[in-house]
Image 1 (cartoon, rainbow, N blue to C red):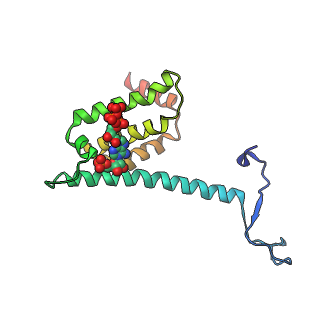
Image 2 (cartoon, rainbow, N blue to C red):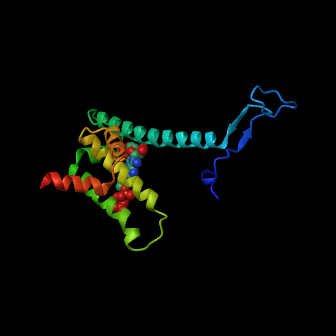
Image 3 (cartoon, protein in one colour):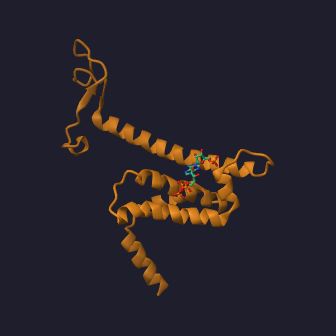
Length: 161
Ligand SMILES: N=c1c2ncn([C@@H]3O[C@H](COP(=O)(O)OP(=O)(O)OP(=O)(O)O)[C@@H](O)[C@H]3O)c2ncn1[C@@H]1O[C@H](COP(=O)(O)O)[C@@H](O)[C@H]1O
């Protein structure tokens, strides 16, 4: 059974165990942390890592755009994409297709993470070209948390007719 699906008894991990009862709570010690708290901390760390990754990539892409103004810079794929919107759109479509292919052709998923990384990176270059921040995208996703896609589509259909 996964730890998160255990009933409400919270396991305790002792950070240090005293020789005698010491605590005002009546417990042996209150110097502990619950597994629940540890799992929450891990989730927060993973969220922070995901956001840092996206913001860091966004910052690199912006830096490459600034470098375009300079005459001699290092060769850069990002700069090529920023300068050529046909190439950029073609790459986004091609990468999305490559992401779908293993599913359609029942291949293994060993490349799926890397294909998704290609889609995200190329789409983020498009965001830069359109002057849209990744935070705007995340905000849209957060707003959608409270509504099912089916409900949203139905509400659009009724306002469109
Ligand atoms: N995340 C990426 C990233 N993902 C993919 N790519 C490049 O995108 C290009 C196209 O990827 P493909 O896998 O489709 O390569 P391909 O050879 O065209 O593949 P096929 O057409 O043969 O399938 C390749 O040159 C990849 O290296 C990326 N290029 C850059 N970044 C990030 O952008 C930063 C700056 O990169 P530069 O602008 O190149 O300095 C890097 O440090 C990375 O953080």
